Image 1 (spheres, rainbow, N blue to C red):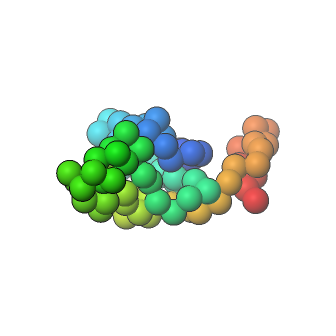
Image 2: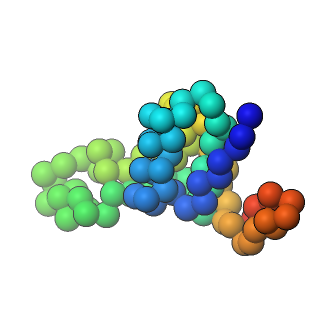
Length: 91
């Protein structure tokens, strides 16, 4: 089975994982990698401060996000790519 690595789990990375899940559900393995264990939806931070929305609605664990889709998550940072070997180097 092919493996896709989503390096960087911000909005674009999460959208990529969602689309891969919709289009290729059980046809690829997906691994998300990010330096943080959590995702914070920054556009709503002012609403948390104003108490119009609870913090748990804007922040979630990336491992939970990926696990719900049958994917894996690794906390780390991409440091480089070995294209010839199809390897992602992390630190």
